[in-house]
Length: 501
Image 1 (cartoon, rainbow, N blue to C red):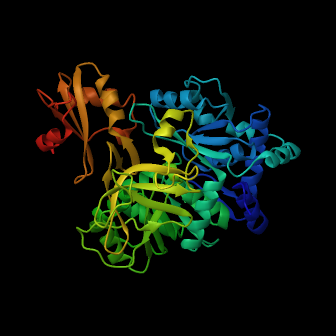
Image 2: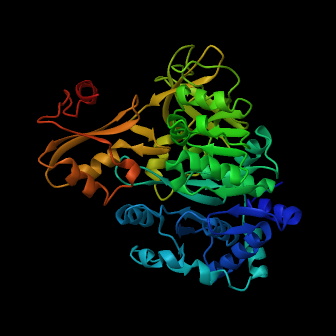
Image 3: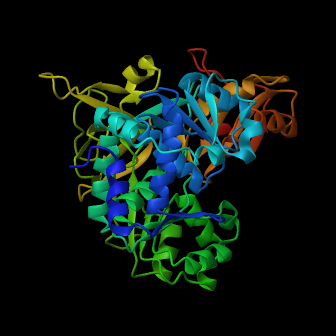
């Protein structure tokens, strides 16, 4: 029985030592080279005598980042990918919460890394991978590790403007990867086309299915998603046969009519998650690649990537909702109403989850953890933690779960979970802005900023980019003389939506 994801790597080394595991635009690495390099880097980390501590990885998305993740695991620690394109202020907020013992960077990123205010020891990847491997010490550390030790912490947007670090253990990832591998029949013949950034949990499927099954994963250059024909040419060149993308990436290909011009020759398994997949665009894919397996997966970062799935087995009209399906193996997913009772037929409820997939909680944030990781109200007899997702859903007549919306102001946009409050906090701090509210137009899939003040769109955008990543910048700005309030003295968002959407 595997208790550590490194067992996956070592099994693949035994079977497929010289096979390419991961490849980016400039580097490819075999399973043996992956093990050797990650052990060497881990031996460098061991010199700091850190155990079960955070290791921040700050470099562009690449093969070397994956080596760094596994090095953190080999050293008995856990990793956090830092979004390389993120503004320094947001990086600083993450680092302040995380307090990493190590920051791994590469020579190209070293100067930027030095601007991060942290007590972490900076390790330069290119220098550290030549470290002599301390096999005995690595073995001693491994014996101390158990399956509930953390593997990674991924940061999601926070309503107060402070990102939340979701802490996931080895056991949860192993549970998930075993299910994915069995359900979608992943073997060493799979060639993954990775789209998801490493700080986004969709990438966990690509990385660890590859590790478990001796597959190969190609990191698709991000710029290709702006040129769908070139993207399809890349899929053909690398003979990619399985993808797990956000729906927005699939919609881009469909909307620009790329599939009418060129079909990917090898694609056989098409999985997607991270936001609502519209059937209008999905039907274009299904029309042009009819024999592929299509699956809609759902789950917040807090439950280890996905907790429900639906393998598409029937036709849907363009205006029909696509089910998120049924629970993944070893996950119990249920809907609770406002009285904390299971919903009746056609009743809307909050999606709640229990099982091995649950995160350990939010890193260094016990109060936030306690708000959503709670005792199961259906079970008063013994301690049993569930995660309340804040997502609303209902069952259809087939017993499949249909996702409806967020319970609060958190939205899913461009594959990212975004708290509208974090955008508002950033804008309200800008000079010449008196008040603002951020809305999400789900019909057009866009963020809309409504504000009072003398600032214009260009002024606000320039300052937002200093604090927020690009995917959190609204696409529409509306200036009002007066923003409406409700009887409680709060912004009347329902009225505001009627006015501007």
